Amino acid sequence: MPLRIHALYHVDFEKLGYIEQWASNNGHSITTTRFYENDKLPDLNSFDWLIIMGGPMGVYEEDSYPCLITEKQFIKNSIDAGKTVIGVCLGAQLIADCLGAKVEPSGVKEIGWMPIELTEQGKAHPLLRQLPKEAFNVFHWHGDGFDRPKGSVPIATSQFWDNQGFIYQSEKHKQLNTWVMGWQCHFEVTPKSMIDMVAEGGDYIRESITHHPDSVQTAKQILALGEQYIEDNNAWLSLMLDNMANIDS
Image (cartoon, rainbow, N blue to C red; front, side, top):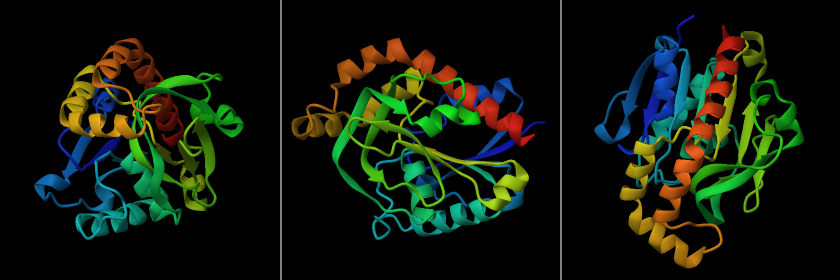
């Protein structure tokens, strides 16, 4: 059954990426709220899935980004309604915050293609069953981290931060066969979106690599490794989304 997907965008250069292609391939529709254009949030009844994308702000910067206040309430309302909610990077951090977990600067920035590994719970989870059982490389672009939300399943770790992802289901989600999932990394990145992020974040990369040389790659390294890893990352994301959609239908 076709899904109505609504995406929340915080900046022009972090959009759905490969998720757009997956949605098109499967006949799903997409609507968006662009906070940087002061778009309004939709009615909860107008969508099935909510996907929250990344951005350079922190979830705790409500004074600088007042839209975070209304966005958090919207995310909470979506979770309470039993919607499938997916968060990418900042999106995952916002979900964690809405579920009562602490989100703060992690003390280390992860930028570039570096490995994560599924936890034992992640390896056994039905949504992730086709993902590699050994460590695999994904695209990181974050300096904040979250504690594991209460009641959620921790699904991945990295060398630099234990909580790289989680899956959550309330009783209502279990009744509806829907899910809440957050990832720090960017499975959705495409060659174009990676180039856009690197172009927009060039100064951020150069500044970060000075202080975190072990966990930040140069723009040249990121682009070269992307040619090697993007296809696999998109394929893994497609499998996860297929699993969510098939269970949800």
